[in-house]
Length: 411
Image 1 (cartoon, one colour):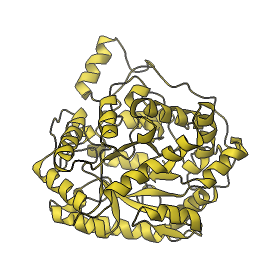
Image 2 (cartoon, rainbow, N blue to C red; image 1 turned 135 degrees about the vertical axis):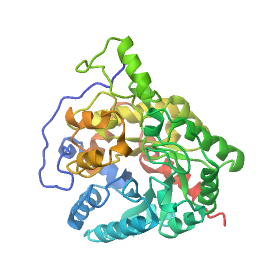
Image 3 (cartoon, one colour; image 1 turned 120 degrees about the vertical axis):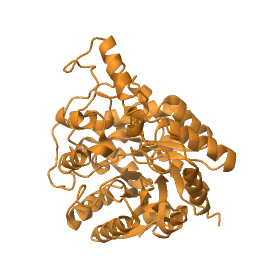
Image 4 (cartoon, rainbow, N blue to C red; image 1 turned 30 degrees about the horizontal axis):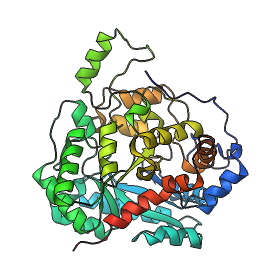
């Protein structure tokens, strides 16, 4: 099986930043030129840290943002709707908690309403925050509530989060045998998203449903691109992204692989996407943002992902989708100390035969905090032959192009 080379583990240089305590700080190993490049360019992150799971104190978010801003991160797409927000009331509560926590930072915050806000934040010394939803559950079965989500600043939205929703099937439903695709309600939701300028996000969505979405978009909303906000490319690891749990079990038995063998898998790398899925989105003009969370790396669960590994993941996506269609997204949870208990307490939403918990058990403890990785990623990409223009596209320009196309209100 093709695997990325594991870089030599290096101890953390700094213990001064405590927002994501498990993430090694690679900043001190980066070149001065790489650090300056990050500060000179727009660099956008994506993370998912629910109140009570990713953070429990406003000060934790404030410290996280202040360190990111200090090291040149322009801003981030912040998830405020996921399994913790099963209805509109919960969504509004999370929106309030995150607004309060982020405003506690010393860094001035610019809440994104238009694409130009990223550039303005970069120029004015602010940190840009755009709100994202990884679920349609807050809609409560009423597509008209898309407008409410838009009013609260949601700029991207997934139709499903892992499990089956009223809109279609998620990846974990799929590995458990669900073959459902985009529903009629899902089509109504897409129409409302396009109308209200919310970008369609395919991450966490089963390949049956993503195919339904892209087919529908190309027929009914031709020229409107979609994104994968945080989805690595499966071929980077030579793994199977679409197997059911039964099919994975059969493959393990056929190869005579058992627990403890290096290539044994409890499940397929279900959060990763196929080359075909990536190319479809690229053909539509969209972007695939590669996440750097360790538990999504198929069978390679280092204590903390290295900048070189992150760069190799980006490079793998570029080889498939092209330089104009790749972005970055850590999917950082800030701290994993509450993630594992949350996953265990919500087993129905993470019914992956223990795959994710197994990753944590094998050492996937860090969350790839971007401020601690990105300068090192720049050095690694330079070594691979990437130009400054290439990296400016990868770090923000590609996504901003898609946002410019999709955030235009259709009402």
